[in-house]
Length: 503
Image (tube, rainbow, N blue to C red):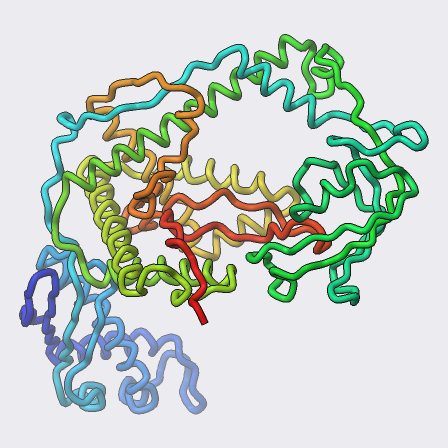
């Protein structure tokens, strides 16, 4: 095998590889010789088929296999011999007439093109200063959590006959929604439950039922939000003919041992202790998230090197696709934004570059420090995932066995967390006590939020996800209820102010 570097411009590499015809012939002969004892042909005793006959019958087919195997083996060896790290699977272009190679009349010659992972120096993490936000778990935090828990356990009791509905009451309703006097699909329901003040129904609906009594017929007039998920209803005025069938008032829930026993605890004090531990864990999770964000920002500042264009382009295309999908969900296009498309694309390209850069940095840290994901860690993550799908564990395990990419996606965040923890051990980390509200403030919630992202991964895994908006609740069954159908937002860049073009 002869290897010639024909292009080494920046991160681009092109290698010309030539394998002599006699080498291919030797491999072909070895394969045909193996076949001799296995092939069964009419007119020949087992194991007695002449190699010359095998060559005549199967020669071209086997040579095709030889060429394919040879390209795979020699391309990998050439990369290893040249000490190169391709960013993506190299592209292979055969030269000359392939039929001549199959017939043994010409050497196998091909070009291999790819981009390489850049060589760069990692920053000295021991000189990296990071601030970790922390908050104390106070008694009032535990009491607030306890009250919320009790609120979710409250029961409703029928009000006395003729009593008017108040804020917080639970109403049982029949209703029919109409637009322009015509009932519309999804606008009707029977025996629907509505807690006044819950905000589950579209704006203006619940308020108009305050003061209603059991047996009342109420005409509720509302306007569907402009960004309502059902396009045929968005922005439309509607009238709901509502029949109030029952009015119930919330019954007081006592904070006592009986409440604790509903959740499997012996006493109220034991429940308080469990809630305190849960809150402590939530605070620790948010503290780590802020530290991780600060670390990623610092790593981005400390490293500056050329990025493989194909990696950036792939990452950008993924982000842009998600962004367009989100706009489509809002019944908008890029043309509806305040910013020109070119500027928006430029902002997203910067995000893509950041993801790729941080992915490469984390991968380099992992490689240089022998950080890897163990089978035990992977199995634990898989078991945790399986617990989310009770009754479907077997199908889930089969899915991961058959999809290496899914396993890689499971491995990526584990690898990332281990690298982040490794860097945190080396860096100078100081704690700053803040309020609970500040601790739970989304790091993306500022005017520059679209330039940040939350999860950056090894380039061999996932290149990172920007902080998605909180996932919305599942869509409701009737159009009177809020349209809460939604998907995770693409990237932490929220769409710039969206405004319809003037007609």
